[in-house]
Image (cartoon, rainbow, N blue to C red; front, top):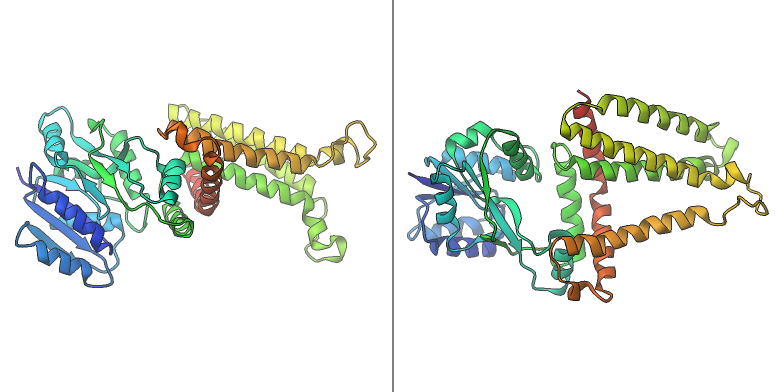
Length: 389
């Protein structure tokens, strides 16, 4: 048995050094460590060369490969019949490789996925961990171990994207007749949570935009797609007022009625297309139905005073500031969801988020969701198009 450990790297030499030090302490050593370096400078190369006397490192300098591409390249250059994966920011525990290999050799499992927890030191990192990662063990591609034959059965990692290829590959493996194991206790620690909100906003925006083309997170994307349509629904009735009515060349006669008819027809056609008979499609169909009802209900809220009270404030049906009230409730619901439900469900202690830190956690989570919005929205369109085929 020959074990090849694949590590893509893009900068972060200090983090990579921690990973290599952890590899040295493994109770079972890999036969080769393939480092695929896309860095713009020589820091990772110099670090790799400094360890070659102590570890069987095979270093490759490549030009601007995304993580999936780098993994594919590293596997193609490796010789092992067993493939292990890490990245330059995920530090394995001493028994990670040995226990993962034991699972593979037991003939009971074909893939041992990574199990990772996220380490936070700075106050903002702890807030970010609360609203995104949590304290529970998370299944990850870094830390995974599988045979070369299993890798080719699942297929190579998606290329041409900076993020999402790991989740897409894991989803692909689960759809095949492949036995999978995930350690209950974390075998890896991720140490590079963003240190400020601007760094995380940039990361979230770029990564989600890159992942939009992949068939992952469709349920989440449908929710974001619904929010996007809701925002459009809010804008449409105000369009002519914003552009200056008939005096503007952007004026559209009967725009609200036309939009309502379009939205109704689009919903009916979409529901007809996506009502397949498999479990996953039915689940998505019901979610899409819920979103459609939610969007149409929102449309009626925005038009309530015009349709029911004809803008007569003395009318019993007139509700002052109904749109503001409705949007405020939606926003507060998002804060509660991001600040309370998500952290608690992911293992964050109650004494951390209470009495008032949940508000900060909720606001940060909502801001990050807004940064991801373009990628989610585009990804939902791609995903719905794939389902319709």
